[in-house]
Image (cartoon, rainbow, N blue to C red):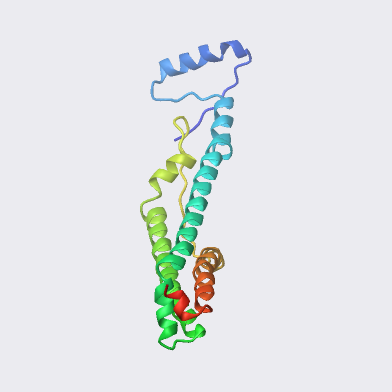
Amino acid sequence: MSDIAFNVPNDDEWANAADKVSALHYDLRVINKEDIVKAYENPYNYKGGIFLILFLITMVTFMLILYQRYAMVYSSERRHIGLLRALGWSIHDVLKLKFFETMMVVVVSFVLGVTLAYFYVFVLGAPLLREIFLGGANLHNKVTLVPVLDFTVLSTIFLIYAVPFVSAVLIPVWKIAVTDPKEAML
């Protein structure tokens, strides 16, 4: 593929020149400078807004999951924690049990999410996301996605995900575990 650039001194003749080039060579695409500038500004303006909306939806969903988990600990597991305390478990034992349960969920979901994201982006080529962020009808973008494992980024994502999730479980468990077992089972 090659490009040919030419200058049309009279701006009013641009459409005429484009029609003549297209008539002589029907397989050529004629693109003016403004179209190229607009096409490359789109990922930073319009498509950046789409990404922001998707990010906000994801964050609200994560907050709803945290709230649901927080409320679930208070309602359904209250009797379970009270029963464990009545059977002689210490507050430390109950917190350790809930910590390991939650960490198993966090680690499995994180590994599964990272694996599926890696597969979607690097094996499938991120078909929908590529069209959203790099798509354009008039310009073809050949971007090769190179797999990179940066453990700093992965650990940061894990901490941003795991700390709120674990705390949303352990704080209500601790509040229930410090109450009297009879009161917790009611």
